[in-house]
Length: 156
Image (tube, rainbow, N blue to C red):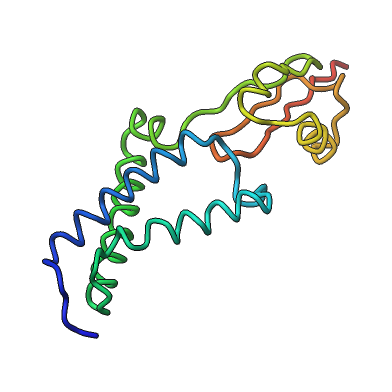
């Protein structure tokens, strides 16, 4: 239970490699905020967790081995957050940027399709913003997966 069966540094390398690969895969999978997860998204996350678990610790099932891997993941995540808060380029690379998905009352359906945003998701966001489609000035898919709606200005 307390004897580590592989070198500690191998646990660190395994955890770092898996973290970076999963980060890349999550960036490639598209934008969706935690509150917008479908049951399918949750299932994929759970299965990802199970599938990479043996790769994190190899044949080691010791408590210290698990703690080394967990600590490495937490420190990597903190490091990525720290660097992203100080480097615009790195933040864009890791977190992405907002994408225009609606303009002057028109939904940009090709862009929405590319970003896997359904019209029903868009209409829900319009309702939440208390904005009819024709009142929409701009709509953005934010880097965190949320949709921001800007209404047209009323002159008068």
